Image (tube, rainbow, N blue to C red; front, side):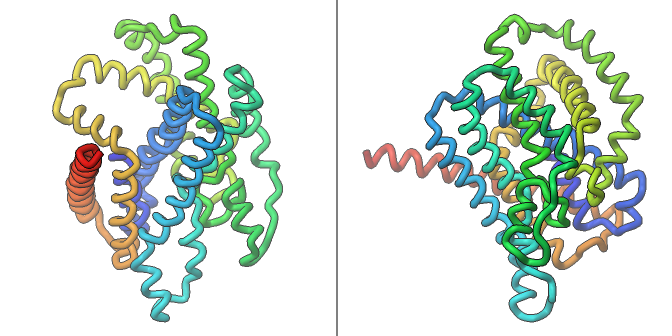
Length: 335
């Protein structure tokens, strides 16, 4: 989430020359493989622990999907105000129905609920499906033109449109990957019983390979518009991200082992615990500010914005957490 805030600030606030510079490329990389793919894989991992019936997946998925649409409206409220007042000629539907990560998560939860009825808990089918999706997604047809309903349906599924940031395909592959990995480790518990020395040894080759190929991955992460760019990547980048996440997980294990009780690490874990509300608040703040200062800020201003927004989002998330706890306690007392 910390990487998400900095990459959203880079995309929305930074002057074009900064965005296109080496600083911009580093920023977009940090906001790429360590963020959305990891988030979806972790989500899939924890979904696999649920044995609830399909209607629970349908309910949760629907809340996430329509909650994502409401977030689109909230983060674009300032721009929509200008559009309503005739001060902007921008098409509002491109912002209201933009395909961000919450609608993706919602659709993924529903489909996972359906797939469980077919594949049960056989992890191999989920692995195979994840690979197949990234292999064939570039061949899926783009349908619909103009403002037709079919255009927006295509955008949510796989269409390469300007407002289609996280379409179901290829991103659903990461949900499947995390889901399958959890089923695999449940079936083979000894696989996950590695210790610190294992992490130190096995993380080295992963870090070497990712280090050698980092320029390729950074180029993809910085390319947000082409059909083969970050939002619509295929099997090669998917494979790279999977390798990266394996090494990343080992490094995180080492950090937790040696520095897990340090204040900064504890803060990051707290952010992860409250990831959804943290994500929602940061987008509402950044999205509405961006309407006023879009791509106009220098590098020192970007640092200022990052510190101020991160602090503000942390305070508001903490307040939300406390208010929710008070509400739960009051409800329990009334019962």
